[in-house]
Length: 415
Image (cartoon, rainbow, N blue to C red; front, side, top):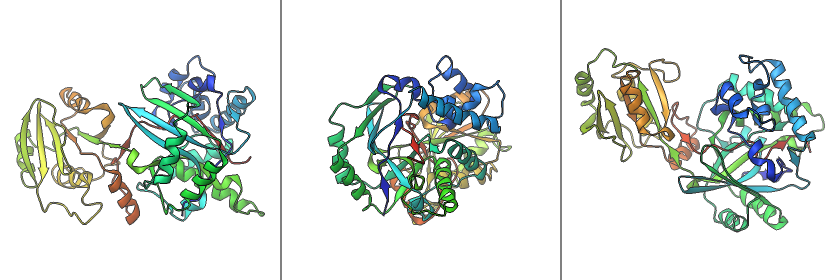
């Protein structure tokens, strides 16, 4: 069962939240962070991207950069830009995009739940990326940025969310990217106890986004447990910062592919090769959006095509084999275009659906790419089924938007 707890959040005063809050560390590069933080000493980028406080080109993994993160974190607290709550709370964090709002509960998730796989993952992690975030957690002795979880729908927790969000939020703003962010503090003890008890009935939590941050947070907590001869299990380092959303609130956006060449084929030869495994329908020069699972949109030589995998070309009983990313990877990218490793092949690139299919068309029309392939998005049920089966999704399968805003609340590993 999912073991969670409230915590004494470290967060900005209401009037400073828009100055402090930032995008997550891993969605922008150092120069973009430097630009966004320009003229704003309160920006969280000074903690999560502290290389911006050094000369351009400074290695973000230099020990002095991690030291600067800690120095800045301490300064933010001394300056009153981040203040710790006196009492343990849960929080509700909601995000609005395109008129749709999703509501999550901010929790301290349990390290042992991750180590024992009660917190389920669907992606592989890279040790170098884990180690980078582990250094950040260690030196700050805090989870500065939250991870993004999902949980099976639960009516009691939904009811709590509805009641909490009926009141005015503590924070309520629209970020520069146009997404709305809304944040409530749960102060009522009975409600806090109900949340803890209800999560205890939920068998698994699921990592939606932030696999490396989750691994880093849990591994540092586990390190601290092993290093403490008086470890009891209730210490704050046994928990890490997460925002957990009911699965039905979340929408996975498509994650599309663009390829630089046709592997020596002409466009007619490539289309002919597709006929073996797909029904190919020309759609003209108007953008075509995939309409269902196993239907893809292809842009090639100034034309859009609807291509649908023929029956028998995939295994509906295989949670990985039935994924459109698997079907396209095997039958198009591998068999026709000779691309075998999506992680390393330089002939392929990936475009999050948030950028729209017009971005795919632009990259082909510019001559940079030879073709674009748009996929129907994965469902939350597919993601959870794969995690439950112990399988790992292929690379570049899921794209969640909006991203969690960093800096709304921080979790310290010691009270």
